[in-house]
Length: 405
Image (cartoon, rainbow, N blue to C red; front, side, top):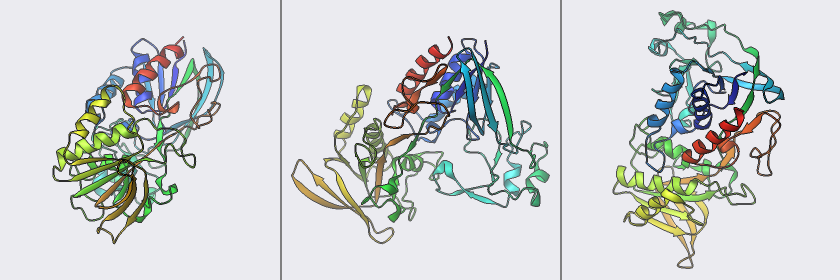
């Protein structure tokens, strides 16, 4: 039997790879980024247990390292695929990270690199050197050189500093053709662009952030190292407003519910009560949609004295001078009035878009991959619909069973 090809190295793709390999199947795991982990490794913690991502992902990374049936291809993308299940051909191209397997992650190259780049892993909160590693538990555990910022052979300081001959600045893109049994597409999701939502003024202040950006601000591996501060001035916020359905359930943007935003904001509110007990929190919502064990979050938030729940849609967010506060205008359905309140920070609960791009896949009217695909092709996880981590793991495990036969 040929290997099963898994596209996407987030929680869905990693789960598919380890589950398949541990049943005895050969797997090729392809990820377009230099490191595995996707969106999950960027999180502060995830519900329902509020575990840090290092907890689950480190175990999965160890399962990959210890299983020779899994071949990992980072900085790689599927160009085309043909054939039927059991006898398919896939063409994959891989860009060079300019750092080979001799790398020990010692960091000597970073200390001499003179070039800086924006840090996309932290959503632009800070910079890294042109040679970098996303975080301490990054997999593969070796550095990557961003060719967009590296001066290459015109500099070569990293080459001179490396004692292991692990850096090759002349490495080129490689194209490879593989015989495969089937394809699991687990390309995950990306956040909706909040700058498209009129009135919420995302670009008007550093202190208006998205829910995923807020997650990095909370994280111990993030720019604040677990200390929540305002991006504008580095001070702890005294008040924070959460704007739910920022782009979701809106025919002008995303007509569907993004499923996880309510639970995420409730989780964030509880995180704030622990980190900053004096900070006031308001959550503006249309409906609070939580199910199963996540209903516990709602009960805990309802009982938290520093959190206020307001049923009503936010119409506008207006920045005062930078650092001087943000005016939130919203309706309060319960009191049947419009309110205007000042906050130190505003968090926009933006919706989920599919991060697709695999050739030959069928999509539904919302842009996610459809349930029925060409023979041998299977979509899983958030590539098919908005899901939380637990639901994603269950979904992709079922898909893996279908793909292996």
